[in-house]
Image (cartoon, rainbow, N blue to C red):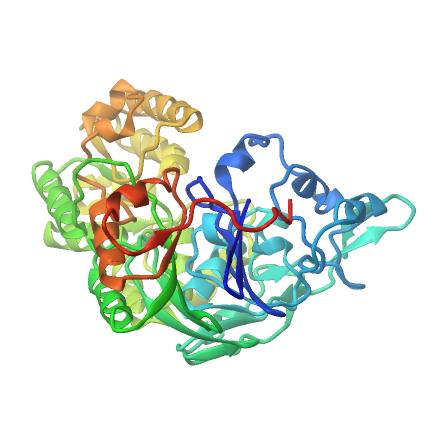
Length: 535
């Protein structure tokens, strides 16, 4: 936690300081205040919780406040008569000496990655969330298709009340879900946001009301600028304050399919007097080649072309839809059809209502279908209303060279079905087109992946991953590119914007900025200038 005072402005960095992700920033000017992102701090979170050790949702905010995984602020979290996360006086005592955040008037959400959006579930349910239509649709699709409990309530809430006499929280059976007041920026919204994912519960509450930038949040006038990132709908924000223009980059890069968006944002901002730039720095201090998405697509094309008749899987991050587009284009060019999961199709459906780009993709893909004893509500909606082009693993097994499978780690059992239907010939390819950080959990998953691939006779590419490298930078992966700008691009961005002050976030090496900007007039903020508040 760091707090900075610059003139009449106060900036509290509750998450994202000397860590990658977990951005939680509070910008104050007088009695006006807004949040900039409200993400989950994964590194700190994973230091306390594992797959089978999770925060106790029946105790609301107790574990997260006590462990410092949420800022200690009064008036910021769900605490109403119809829905609360404070089951006992014990949780309230954790906020006894905390500053009041009841004057926070809205959240500016840069994009749909959970390190920026993953703690929204705990915020009070009347707080407006300003973000793009794409980000709103992605978060809704993620929540609909997940089995997450309290921490997954990003776009609507399952109201919780105190169970009388027991001091714990319980949900209210068939009481409707309560929709959060999203304010999609500059784009239409259709009926997707009104669909309940459950068969027995309605979705009610705040309507989603589009706004056109520039818009006002309390006393702040805000503009939003589309930027290139590894998830659709990412934006940077420019906030007009009494001291001058505050620009928040969110996460961005120049080398993806939509790199021109980041260029247009930079061109627009360099004509203005930027008082404070709050900039991501994920790749500060890193060396290594930066590929474009076009180069990744070319590498995938070359690899698939060399193996025309074998089963091939491409494993990329969920919601990395530009990689999905690359795979679709490669598959088409080589006479294959792209096969995705029902969750992917549902996400594309939600996005297709706000952007026709995804409607075309949805029509071109095949969706894997398999017998299920019971379908979730969202699955029934997908198959009965959307009626996508389906395909079974048995069909894929009969002609593996006609399909390209967009499957990840959790789809490995589906590949077992493929082998049982087709036998063990020919050898398949499993192309890892994902980021690789080599933390303990990912190394464990990689070991599991290698065991599966050995049993299934699939060869892993790039082959260096099979050696379980400790240094992810040592793996030259031609099938993936970062969602973040390299440090030379970040330095160029700052030099062109010429901000008076730079606040580093989303980086483990904030001091690197001073070396990169040596000789520039920009003052890099590294030492807090306010008393620490908020836990």
